[in-house]
Image 1 (cartoon, rainbow, N blue to C red):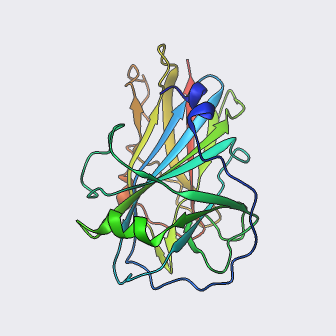
Image 2 (tube, rainbow, N blue to C red):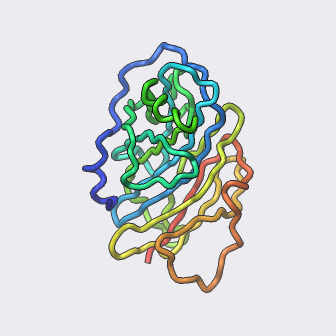
Image 3 (cartoon, one colour):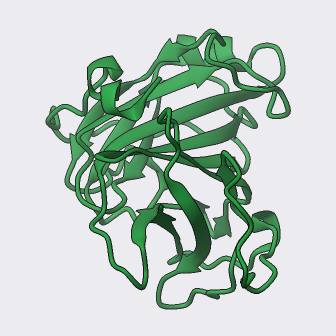
Length: 249
């Protein structure tokens, strides 16, 4: 599906906060992981997709709220979130069955929600996982998969630094979530992304380049950048974000 048409396809637009929750969160699962971060860019919009593996762990019962902070540039035009009953190693396809996750906008993380992506003090959205849905998603493998999609305005272009998207990463307690595959794609019929790079950004970040797949693969560059490292091996800090820059032809 083209990003330009996604504003009509995202059925779960972020809604205003419905109030501050007072209930406590149930005992939750073990460490999640970021299986894939994908950016799809067209000539007027950008779609940022997080695929998160969510183990059941010690969870027994109760609804679960997860907090996702907004990335940059700006507040998303639309967002949605989906819950899949898929093994982390399985391929996520466009026809894979899922359940929609209800969402509420919030100015910061409510005390009842677990911080899943991004800093808890930043504006974002609360994902409401109902007990029955989470139980169904984890019944076969003990692991659920969440996909969060955010539709953003196209970042302004700079001749030297290209266009930049800031993607929020996750920290669970004191542990940083491992990052799997990074992708940037041009879904238009005439692909226009010439090259891209990715690196961690933040006050403590190691800015060494990370491997990111450009789809479809562009022509080789005459001067190659430093050999990028695998995202899963990157040294992470709780304050790190992911900065993805891309240049267009």
